[in-house]
Length: 76
Image (cartoon, rainbow, N blue to C red; front, top):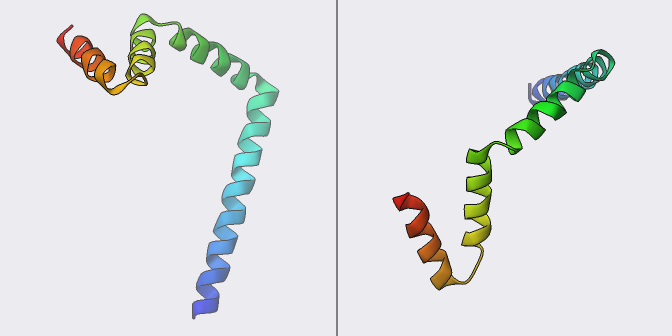
């Protein structure tokens, strides 16, 4: 019984890996990944994302500066 469970897990893992490879191959062939890269780039240029990333970079400072940056960003 336990051996069957291990075999089923192995087969499901191989199937999932095969499906991922197939999907990536099809995405490369039809240009979906190129479009996705442009969408991610456009999303990263969005001002809301830039505010979040600047807040995180500010939070990496010293502990006193961290609390001040957090208080400033939460009041805006």
